[in-house]
Length: 123
Image (cartoon, rainbow, N blue to C red; front, side, top):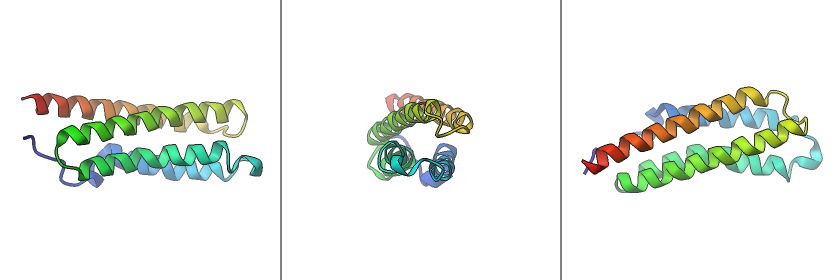
């Protein structure tokens, strides 16, 4: 069996995901009040899910499960990307471009980590 990640908090992708969540929560405060239980709520769930799934996967037994949770985190990142685009088109998040860029970086990091773990897992 391949060596497990000892501490998910040391992973750059987890750190970036947490920082992204903090930034996203900041822009959500500017959303119209009638959106706080609609799109804003969806965005909160998606952004928090990214770092949470990385952490949960790291805490599971074996790389196979870790890879599965990293994949779920990637799905949440794609969901967040879509929701930020919708918010941007609605005029709710003018600064969404920076957040979208960071979301793309996180998705790429997740994909690279998954690929790396699969190569190690298959050996």
